[in-house]
Length: 485
Figure 1 (tube, rainbow, N blue to C red):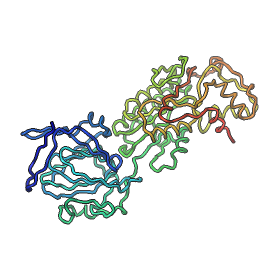
Figure 2: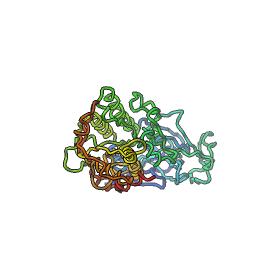
Figure 3: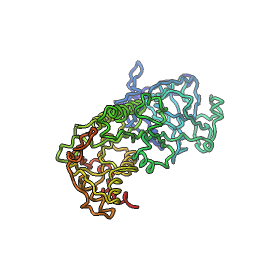
Figure 4: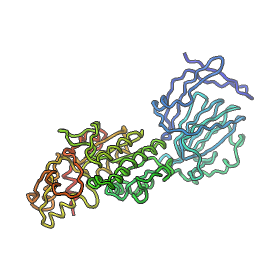
């Protein structure tokens, strides 16, 4: 049975009530991400107890797992003490240990809800999650009020802050106690009106490997967005031992790892192994640690080479990895590392075609020059165009489905490399019969350098990515567009 505890306010004849026995519950507000929690408070004649922060229960109820690193308490001895409006570049979990406040929040983030206002009273049985960039302020309604808040970053002189005047006419906050009758700092009275506020920018997205074929496709997809930051391998080396110090990571929402060591045969050499393990395994593992620590979503692109290609059906996302080459081993290790971070998307692809030199361009050139190639005809798979990977990445980040692995290739029937070559010849006006099919063993029989084992079956099951609303396009249509003059 619910009880209410009455507590007399010092210096006042009025009585405030704390409701005992409320279930943990969440109420949304007009400000996106700003939510109010009802907290269960348990009390008797001795006083009361509450779980002010309980990660497992609160995340299950919908609170972001925001990773607090510091707990602050502001004690206010007088009724009417008023503080704010301050917007900081970190998330806050606001509550009251004793007393009662009137809280006011104004969205000071870039976007369509800039200037939105929400107000409510908070006693020990309530808490509010305040997202990064939402202005926070309060006015004490009882003496000896202890205002407490968890934050998920430490103060930094390099951080971006915004402030709003408590009396701003656009926000039009209806303060219970008029501002001319309260205790307020001179600094808070000098903050600008809403028209003069510098909005808190969106958290950034970092694209690693911006100079590669996938990086270039991502630039086509995201290039006009101001919050997306691009880094080539020279600017951000996945093999570097100090990635954690490379950025102020609290400013980032997403890392897209488009970088990789993809020279599959060179990876079989002594120097190649070092480079492949650094870029494909150690680098993603460090990104995963960074993402876990700072609550970042990590998008990582994987490969069919994590499988041995021995199955007689398309590979599913939950199939056990079984790589047969150094490149495949490094990619599998990277996948395992990335999967340890809570917010991750792994896009597993095959036979990637993008900007620059690749199989399609080579075959088209041979057709034009009258050269009749020998092409492997015992490896099966589907092409994956970099443009489709970029579109799928954007879909994942726009819709935020369940985290995990998603297969992505073009749609359509599986083909061999020789089938693809014949189709390229046909689409470029040449005779597809000029392409001769050979086995993988025959093709590499005369190789003088180390050759990586290839999976003979690289066909990936596409059901899961289709279930989240992304429909891969047919490979023949994409190939036709790719070859168009």
